[in-house]
Image (cartoon, each protein chain N blue to C red):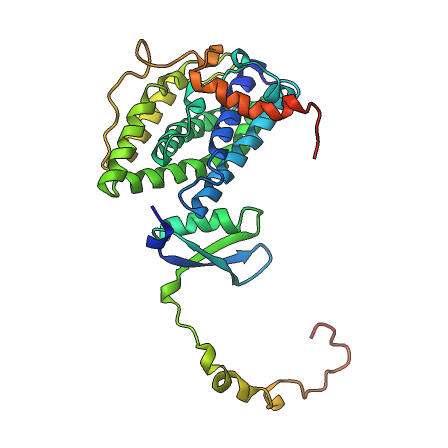
Length: 95
Length: 238
């Protein structure tokens, strides 16, 4: 038995106080059921989470590091896309 | 709350302690890292149970590290060498199914053992789930995994009958417990395309006597490993 034969899974854990699942790491497992159990043992053993997702790493479509410039740089010099030009009314404390 | 019967706490505590040690032996040796963590997790759960149970009897360290072989009251099943991965899974299947049913029943009582049982039943539920999933995969996996799993189930079968001998101080319907255990094991093994072993579980040709302090040969070596540090450096702390 070798992990070389086992697919890689990405693990997402929703923490006790969080609303969304956050990427926690990855692991090897023979199938989805075992991946979920392995994820429980690897990433929630110190009561970090209340919900776990596992996703086959092969199913993730990611942007390429080579395309970083064309993807993300154009946004850098356009501050008007950020909602920072509003005056915050007095008395609003939690904004 | 009623005080827990010491003999029962000792028997259940020793089961948990020694199985925890056997599972811990996989650290650094498990087939894959993920599984090593899973086994270590289960071992730590059991160690936690052992600590609570042995504390009901006396000083937990003294009981774990300074008792002689004949003073232990665990089932012979839990002291057997860890064997290959199939042996470990077969034992987990037999033992966690037993412990799950037993704790469920003990949780109804009103002793300190009941308190532990109602807490531990959730973690044991996971231990059983882990063992059942691996049984399915090994039994219904490759020709070799099937053969090894069947061998392991057959080899450990003779140690299972002892689990249903009444433990002094516990009010449990042992016959019902045994029937439920057999049902559960039969269902899982059938689903895993494995055969329920047909050899004896009790009587001659079967093991027994662990609860009376009669242990098998591998026990002494294991105890030596488990106790040597504490005995060489009494009172050592981190």
